[in-house]
Amino acid sequence: AQTVTQSQPEMSVQEAETVTLSCTYDTSESNYYLFWYKQPPSRQMILVIRQEAYKQQNATENRFSVNFQKAAKSFSLKISDSQLGDTAMYFCASIIQGAQKLVFGQGTRLTINP
Amino acid sequence: GAVVSQHPSRVICKSGTSVKIECRSLDFQATTMFWYRQFPKQSLMLMATSNEGSKATYEQGVEKDKFLINHASLTLSTLTVTSAHPEDSSFYICSARAPGQGNQPQHFGDGTRLSIL
View 1 (cartoon, chains in turn red, brown):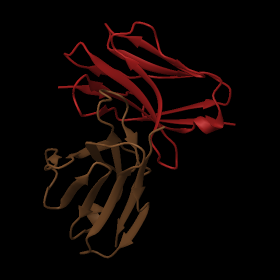
View 2: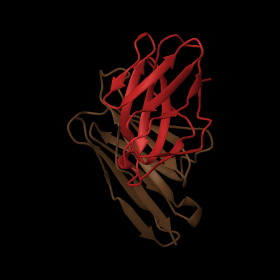
View 3: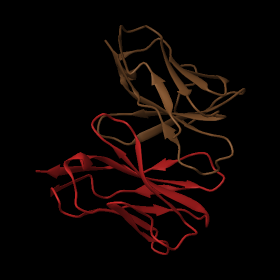
């Protein structure tokens, strides 16, 4: 079975600081995809970043980057120069290649303080 | 980019009422759509996978007679909560994936907040 675990229910940092959200996963498959989604108070689900498991290079999207450690099955999200608009729930998710179901972690509530 | 529209965004109704929620893919054809339920401060829980032209696949513990899903076209899936009761109050979100996109990310609707009085 595929599982995704986020061990940090809540985090809080000051504006402009860097914050790292943790995510671990478990799968017996070798081909899969990993995602970070952001859910602000409006409750829209917004894709932040994605990583293909076969790629060794860590994905980067502007201030967002991941640390993908395949052997450790770890997929953390780093937010640099955090902004007030980054305040949201963040969900880590994975999907096996060829499968339909996206498996979500429990979520981390991130608050950026002014 | 791909857009998924979900309607209505908010429903308040009396116990015993049936409520229909629509999920539309606006600029792509979605052979598969997904319905999630989200309780406050919790993660998304997959309820069912909606397949165009065939029966939906429900997750374990989800009552198919309670949550009716119809995916009659490549751009529309509907979730009907039948004889809704206060315990059905929740946030419901749909998502869709275009055919041929493999494991491209799912595109989510904006969700429906359902409140049963």
